[in-house]
Length: 387
Image 1 (cartoon, rainbow, N blue to C red):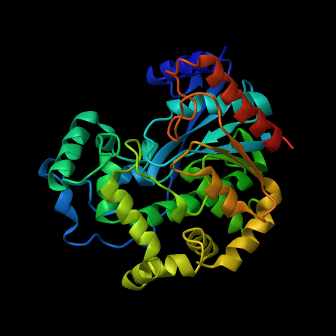
Image 2 (cartoon, rainbow, N blue to C red):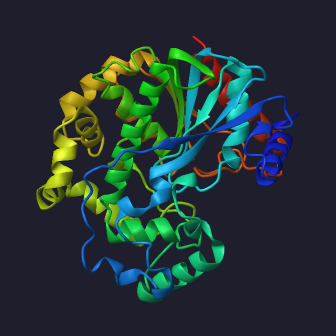
């Protein structure tokens, strides 16, 4: 079965409600639940609802009141009959993703290539960790129209990015809180595995990573900040991601509109003053390894020596795959970030129309070339993670 057929069959099964059980390919999808522990998060400014239509009140409420983000499902795709594997792979997705269908063929390729379970774990406020309203086309189109009315120069606004754009435009530090919460969740998930709480994985099973886009950034930080040696043997494949945040360009109809993208990059440039303005954020970034590693990956001159030393520590276990035509996470920026670390860096340029959000477009007329591009990436990933 080729990539396009695999995508359609898995997506159809998933959309039909088969969130668990056989996925028509011989593999089995399991569902678990995870509870995210509370964090010290700041209250929103009183003026935060300036760009929130009356009908969407709640989009900008305190984030610690979003129940979906605190108690949520994650999925595991596994070989049939899998019991207590000594290894697993965490698959981390990109920014502003709301549906898992895109990633099911990716997970399938990793399961079949490695013979181990693949865990699809959601970033905070993404996938199943956000209210259904945020992905509902009708109210999100209304929100996009409202943003365009109030910001005449707005670019790249769409129903797909309206919720995230509104939230980050209003308070861009949400990006930091969301990322740091996800890192804490992943560390706690690893602790659960170490204790033997997951029936598909042996106690202390090794966790590797296939991480895409912002997921690649988070996976790098997780390994860089691994003071407790949870991931000392873990290997990482980054795909279309892993550069400094200041080098990213998240302006896209699938990701962020121009107002949100500008707010986010302004935060990156003014992070020191933001830490002083919000002491709770300063504490989180400065008083633990994950926070310092996160801050070191924002701009080039922030904790440079620490960043370069941390990347050298993990470089021999990292393989980065980028696409030359990726404008969101530029391939050369990824290569520059990892230069001197010992990481393997490969830049591909498949001969079909692609972009960051659609590296393997299902609707492409160049179906054979897309198939080859998909196989190239995942053959490389299987080879690296299987070492």
